Image (tube, rainbow, N blue to C red):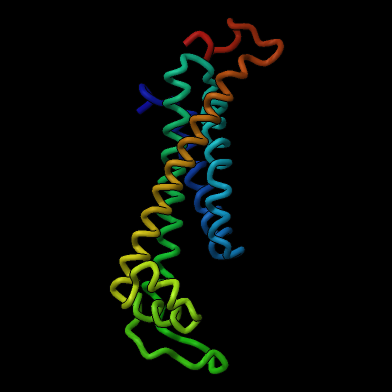
Length: 189
């Protein structure tokens, strides 16, 4: 792998995986605002693409700069997309229908999408679901899976795009003041 990507970029991919874990848990479970994942995704990509090349001290050739950024972005993007979709699907497939007494007591349903579908109906989202073509638990399950796939693909595209932009920013910055071309090993390669 080191012939295509620098070691720093491979390390940055691992950092991106850790970043994805923290983002998914922090934004989906602790803050519980899933849309924040989509807002922070391009920034995460920008940072990881920049970091991959900074860690590698790589400013040229441009192909290697872009490969480093794309690798770290891909690892980060796939990690975040899998975690985002996985956490969301756990809540659908593990829904047992439990509700407190003041909420109307437990739902009578099979654990999984059927309980989630009944929960949405109980929350008054029936007309909205019908407009989306959802009239039963099976259609609800298909809709949820399609939404998670679309969300995951969006995350992948946005993070990788951000990572490439971050790599370009790092490469375009040029050597720091006081670093000549002879002192910057990345400028020679």
